[in-house]
Length: 122
Image 1: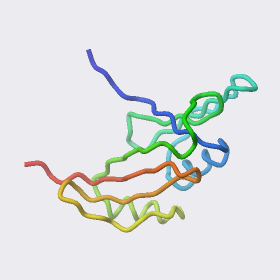
Image 2: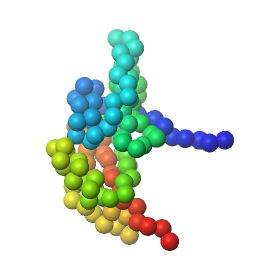
Image 3: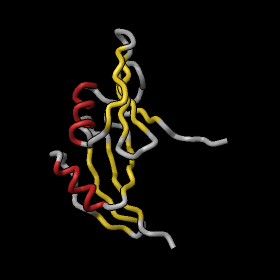
């Protein structure tokens, strides 16, 4: 049996602001935006090339906004940083560690993202 992680909740204070950030600045694709009831809104966004999406909304989670810590993996950290900066996203400098190179950014609520280029194995 396969066990796939395909959706992670990201708690936010303003769904429309977060949706704009993730589509315009981070380059995610908007998959769904449904107002189910007055208390429940579900927004799903997916990073390019990812099998795992994020969920934003109202009535979804009890975690405080800004508490998520997530990681993306790319083949070229410098190209990824340039792409994010080109969209106007404030992203840190490339940092090199023995296990890979990273850049870091936050969404408007303070949810933390790391972007990693994994070193070749072997």
